[in-house]
Length: 186
Ligand code: HEM
Image (cartoon, rainbow, N blue to C red; front, side, top):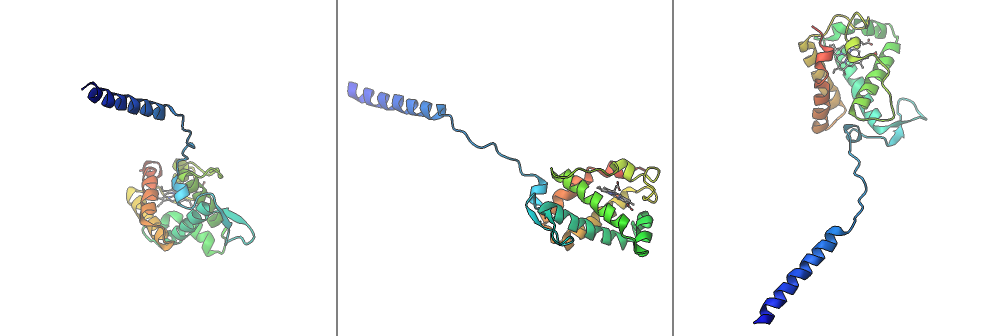
């Protein structure tokens, strides 16, 4: 009879001791590094830059630049909003690409940094100043909320032209949406 009680009791104590030592063991795991949207867009892996043979560029930045450049072309042909870009369009029509190159560079850096890139610094105008004709003479008239919607739809077209997966288009769209009140100032 006594044996019947002692054996299970020993087993319970042994199990508890085992559990205690297991929980007490210090296991060191590597600190998890949180993946950013920039990582999903290609991240920091260096790849050759097709626009500048012989130079390298982060894969994330290249992917964003491709979408940005496609989007600028879509906007240029979009009569809903291309009236805001009259300065840029008249330069390009005259064969002067300096404004286009600067806009492409600024927009690319802006999106790269906003999605988590660490290797670049955005030095352009604030979103408020960039979209106020008083502080940016390249912006013709203030943008309305409908203009903003058209801009987003052109961005989606530009992203699709570059076969960006739907989930990433969605994430970029959400990020862009947070800027509506700074861009739309009327
Ligand atoms: C969240 C959405 C948007 C972002 C992130 C964005 C971003 C930018 C950036 C980074 C610049 C360059 C600033 C600089 O040169 O320092 C810029 C310029 C400009 N943006 Fe936007 N923008 C957005 C929406 C819009 C909308 C909705 C319009 C009008 C429909 C617009 C019209 C312009 C124009 C006309 C310029 C000047 C282009 C040039 O340099 O010739 N933007 N924007």
